[in-house]
Length: 151
Image (cartoon, rainbow, N blue to C red):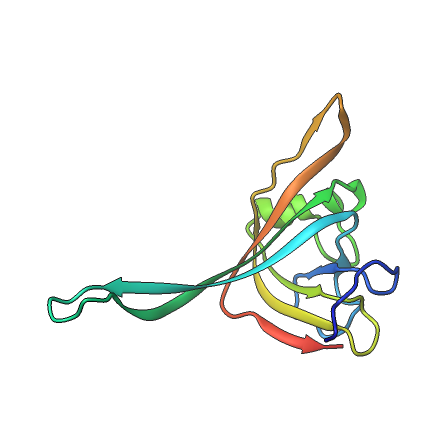
């Protein structure tokens, strides 16, 4: 088995965003201070019953795909444009289609990623006295299919 270990500095999970199709590992920018990330591919299922069958029947329907996670708010990418791409808040607020790659084990040659396009949503920055750093959930509602690739 080849488990994917993300504990070394060169094999960390990475979220890359751009407003143009991502063709290289340097397109757009890397979202800093990623705390966790989840890629969801949830195929829809339509179930029905028939009088002549004692079991339910099912067919697949289009998938609802999304990328979600949590980040520590970094003002250099949350509010400001970086590498020609608006900040995360503006990308969400302006409903800008973004292209993304989620790297599973860094960005070196041979690294695996899942890519697609979609819209940023569910930003909800929060801070409190016992957690005095702004953190926010982040979600990409995927527009279409997810694609697996290798650097």
